[in-house]
Image (cartoon, rainbow, N blue to C red; front, side, top):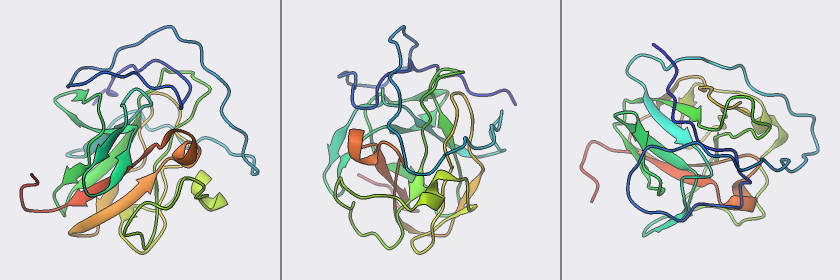
Amino acid sequence: MKALRLAAAPIAAAAFVAAGGCAHLAGGSVAPTPAPTVSAAPTTAACIQSAAANAQIVAISPLITPTTAPVYGIIAGYGLVVAGSAGNVSAPIVVAPSATVQFFDDDQLGSQLHYSAAGIPAASAFPGPTYTFPPAALTQSGTQINATTSWSTGLLSGQCYSQAFTIAGPGTYYFGDVTYYGLGNIRDVIVATSSPVP
């Protein structure tokens, strides 16, 4: 299977495109700005070139604009890919409790910006904007998304997939970007349910 090509433009995490609806993410020519520095010397995660069979793909992009979800508050930067497209407005990621999920950094190939998804254990709401992920979240870890342990995609390069994650069962799982959680509110929830979500 070939890599998914959504081709988002590299832009600063705090700058978002204000557009509504559902569309293919499109490339552009905005010059990237340097990512904020972190105390550890991060390395990018291994670049997986294709999606796992039957995986639900979650795109990561600052072009997926923020919204206020009624139950969860501000979410931004993540979108479930359906038929090759991710919506350009954030929404909770709704999947079956037995789903396999993979994250995809939708930035341009070769971009200096690296995006991630890391679980926030024991959360029933998003921590404040000054929340800091543990240094281990900079590194790819775990293969199961659950409410009690840490998991992370590590810092993904543009046009790369994360490792595949299985969902532990029904529940709501809070996660965010290790670097841009507090800078651009890049965070979301996975809602694993067998019931339709309104």
